[in-house]
Structures are given as C-alpha cells and as structure tokens.
Length: 472
Ligand code: MN
Image 1 (cartoon, rainbow, N blue to C red):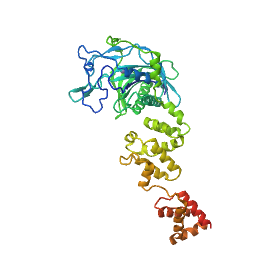
Image 2 (tube, protein in one colour):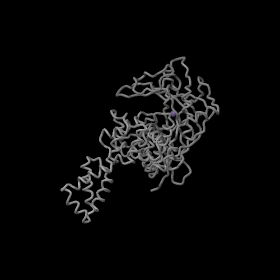
Image 3 (cartoon, rainbow, N blue to C red):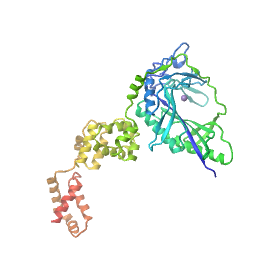
Image 4 (cartoon, helix red, strand yellow):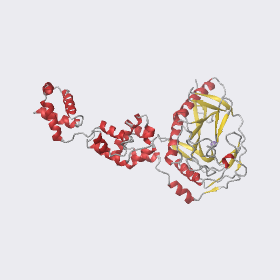
C-alpha cells in the first residue's frame, strides 16, 4: 500500500460583530429576532438603493488582520461576484476579489508551526434558506452581515493540524474582539479542501472541498475521512473527482454534492456604487494599536505560572484570561486550578463564564486559602457560590462565614478540642496503638478532632498537636 501526503487548505468566513451591517444602518445583531426584521432596502435590493460602507467594519478588518500577523493594504476595493441564489436578492455578492484589504500573514499554532495566510477580504454574507418538504423559507436578516473570508496557504498536512489551525484562528478572532465567535450559530464557518499526492511529490493532487463546517471537530473528522476515502481510490488506481462534498456529523461521512470540473464564471467586476478604500498609514497604525492582548501574549505571560495543558484549555475562555491578568501572580495559579477543577466540571460552565467573580473576590479567596483559613474543599465551595445569584455580590469571607466554612486556626482553641478527644475513653485504645508504633492510627484521631470541631479544624494543625501530646 502506498502512502500519500495530505494537503489541506482552509477558507474561513468570520461574521464581524459590528453594530450595523456592512452596507446599511440596519442592526447587525439578529439573535432572537423575527425573520426578515433586520433588513434594509439595500438588503432587499430595491431599485435605486445604494450601499454605504460601514467604517466600523474597516476598523474590525484592520484589527483582524493584525491578529493574523497580516499586512494591511492601504488601497482596497469592492467587486461584484455574480450568481443567482434565492437568499441573495441582489443577484451578486459584494466582495473583494482583486484588491483585498488584508494581505499575507500567518497563524502560529500552539506548537510553533506557522500556517501562512494568503489574504483575507471583506464581503457581505448571504441570507438563510430553511427547507421544508415541498417549500423553502427565506430569511434576509443575515444579508450583508460583514464577513471576512480568510484564505490559508496549503501549509496544513494533517487532520490534527487542520483542527488546531481552525481553533487558533477562532481564538485570534475572538481575542481581537471582532466576532462573537459563536460557532454553533455560524459566526465562523470553515470550507476545507483536501488533496492527496504520493509522498515526496511536488505536485498537489485533485482536491475535494467540504463546505460549511462549523466545528473544529467536524473539520478534523472530515479531513480524516477524506484521507481514507481518497487513499483507497488512489490505491485502486482510480482518479479523484474535483467536487464539493457535504459532511454529516451523524454518519461521519462526506457525500458528493456537486462536481466542480469547470470553474464557475462569476463575472467579477468592480463594484460601481462604492468608492475604493484608501487608508492612511496613521489610521492603520491607530486601529492596529487597539488590538487587545492576543492568545500568544497570554501564553507568554502565564507560561511559568500555569501548566501548559491547563493553559491551553483555559485559553478557550477569553473573559477568564482577562480576569487572570488582573490578579497578582501568586493568585493566578490557584484561581486557574479552581477553574479547571470546578468550572469545567459544571454543566453550566458557559453561563458561568459570562458572570465571572471580580478580581477582589478571587484575590480574597486565594489569600484565605493560603492562610489556611479555608481548606481546599471549602475554597471550591466558596468559589462556586460566586456564581450563585443570591451570593455573587458577597465577599469570600462573608460567604465562608455564612456557610460555616472557616477553619479553626486558633491554636489554643484547637488544643482544647484535642484535649477533649484524648480525654474521651473511646480513643484510649487508638492512643495506645499509636504509642506502640501504629502510625496509621493518627488518621483516626485527626478524624475525631475534625468531628469534634464540626469540620472547622485545620487537619494539619490538628495532627501536629496530637503528635506532640502523644509523645509525652
Ligand atoms: Mn466568501
């Protein structure tokens, strides 16, 4: 069986979270709204209506470009891409074909591999069709939501790399603050083309394209599936058809959709209703400077404090990274542990991340744990209460008091409790066993102290006092 080298190219559409649409002043956020309620005359393509470019989308594109280490082109322009589809009344898409706003750059994967970006361009989204048994409904709310389409170079050579690239791209866009990044609702969609060539060959094979994947896992699985499918065909000496294939998460398979043997002619032409975009160097620099802290900068900042595996998990949560950055260094490790051990185990972790505790609450919790006023179990308990609507306004100390979680650190009080336990005839046998060299029995005695203190004693202090007393 021969072996093949796989090459993957990815085009990603990112919906920008601007206030209004790309070419009109209609609300760009249609979440939870009635179909066809966020539509301007421009989106309906009513006769005589003219598009007007949204300046915020330009600013977002600059930031997005910088987040991918890309050049920003001072001169760019829009073109018309003609095709008919019921969800785009204009009969063409306004996009950037010849002169995109974002030039070459790269995305760096966590392992340091750089995947080059060929370019990225601004364009308007299409509407949405919902198909029923014998009819379809059109919703134009999404028409001309600003998109940037990011085109990678053929630098990806495994399913895992395809997954990592998509994820890192998602992080770059989310941290740049240009998209809501909600994959489930299609805020980022991946078109993945996959080809195989004999190992060592300098030519790329015929590619199959899988459109509209909306999770990192589907990207990874679709690439794995295509590798298997195409290598089996090549082993049999068959040819790969150039075609678009659809992916089903349910079956884990790709199936043919339409063949692409001839390239479609979109009759690109310069968009006559929009002037070219000219950006001054100063304007580009000012916008680029607004790029918030990037995932890479967070990695750098926390690399000696948070374990690498943990950090890679936590990086999926931008608000959390912002919160950690507000904390003192020694609290960062503790809080990051709380998040991985508690938050990720909670079903509602996503909602919880939307209402994070304040830095003051978290810092106090860390200090109390460090001073052993709270056991590690108790600190988790207090931490969870920060997300409880009835308690979230309270300080760590108030919550600990209310739940009776403060540990007894007053040594003389603890000594009295220990004395009480040792005076209890029920512990007499255990004391003798310990004195006779049975180390394990200390656990039982500490347990008795914990019980007598109603769980508030600090177990290590209790053990220390017990040992001293039993020596005498
Ligand atoms: Mn596109």
